[in-house]
Length: 204
Image 1 (tube, rainbow, N blue to C red):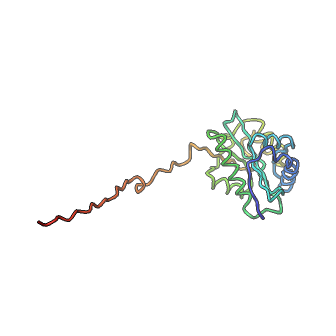
Image 2: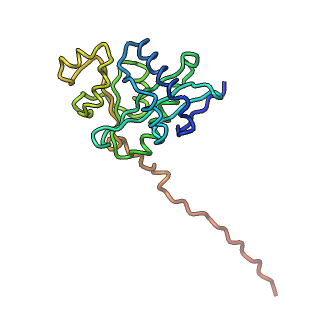
Image 3: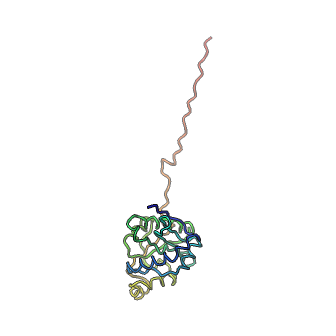
């Protein structure tokens, strides 16, 4: 196995339909509300450099893409998938980190958020600095919440006026991250000691 993760571009568009099929199959298997996307939508994400793709040679291994909401104030890392033949090898975590770092690079001032019922996703997000929040702290963009319509728990979300569901809301805000100050040792400037060799006096 020689899996490599790439920032997607137009040269990977040929995988778009396969990615859509894998996203749909993954959602069906888990019974979750991963939003259905067309091959054209996935291709657009690749064209704009807002996705990462994992390949083993020319075989599709995994994928994830970036969505923006509320005038780019909120960013979601969506459609995280790993092919069944490559699961339980830590690849989801690597793809997640890559799409997270790409999100930070493209949208340094945006808040990155996620809603999930999956324990593995919660752990990955927590390791990256995400914190659990109420839905009121997430985007109110209807486009995002419409993506939950395919979920079997959508009626619960509706009954709670989109403020609560079985999913946990997770949010990464760069402003809340601790600032790593240099240690006292690092601050201390140590001047080198230069020894001057004394010349021997010549006796008369």
